[in-house]
Amino acid sequence: MKLLVLFLGLFLPDLHPFHSSVTEMSYNQKDQSWEISIRLFQDDLEQSVSSAIGKKYRMVPGDEASEKELDTYLRKHFRFHAGKQISTPYRWLGTEQQQDAIWVYLEIPTTSDLAGSYLENSIFLEVFEDQTNLVQWAPAGQKKSYLFRKSQEIQQLSR
Image (cartoon, rainbow, N blue to C red; front, side, top):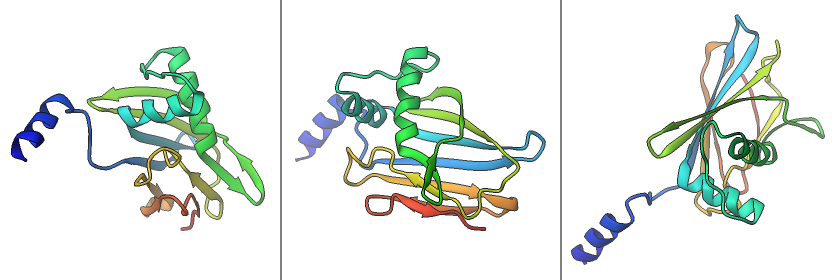
């Protein structure tokens, strides 16, 4: 048994035992905008986008075509709801590679604190049963955390 675990560890080093994303949302008073950073495991990202577009996808930070595919995917899985309206009002800022993860940077220019709006975070939920998406939101300097998973894809942001 130990030999099998060692063998798998040597030949499948990129596998990780859980599927998760972490999103941080903080308000920049000077720029009057919400700054959003999303940390995604690269292998999960590539598998999920490949599944969504029906062909092999490879994430290359800074590559226009690669980032456009990811932006399209995120606009379907990371969105805000105000009443029955669905909107993705954010601006795409770019991506950054960090070891086995990709950081995605977005911005929402607004003076609103977003309290009362609903956030949908269904990133990778269509591919991984155990996927969890943690969102840390800091309205008025108070940090709040929300955990998104299957059957809990939309949650209301509150102060």
